[in-house]
Image (cartoon, rainbow, N blue to C red):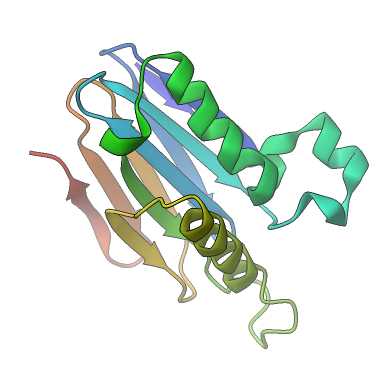
Amino acid sequence: MYIIVGVADMKVSDDPGSVLITYSLGSCIGVAIYDPAAKVGGLLHYMLPESSLDGIKAKKNPYMFGDTGIPLLFKESYKLGAKKNRLKVLVAGGAQILDQKGLFNIGKRNHTLLRKMFWKNNVMTDFEDVGGNVNRTLKLEIESGQAWLKTEGVGEKKIWGK
């Protein structure tokens, strides 16, 4: 069963029949985490780096922002039995789609925030595909932990799992 993770959304699952998927990762960042021992996975699709940009929206939807969404992704996966030291971490997005001249650099700012947060919390990524100017789709299968990335103009490829 596909569980769609929308823009500014996050889902975690321990249901072996579930596949988490998020579409249209442009300047947004998709973060997929998976614990192969607990068979728990999560997927976050955040739009903007910092919740301080709009405190009201951040309270309403913390998944819109990296600095509030990323910690919640990890915490919710821990509630289902995931352990930080076993997590596989996959990151995609951070492109420069609508901002061709780089005035706002949302994609780059989103990725920079993620890298800083991961560094401070001793989290290593197992796969990253960020930047450029293409949209991406990220998919994570809960039973096997296999993950696929579909990139506009390139197609779909397996990025993690057997």
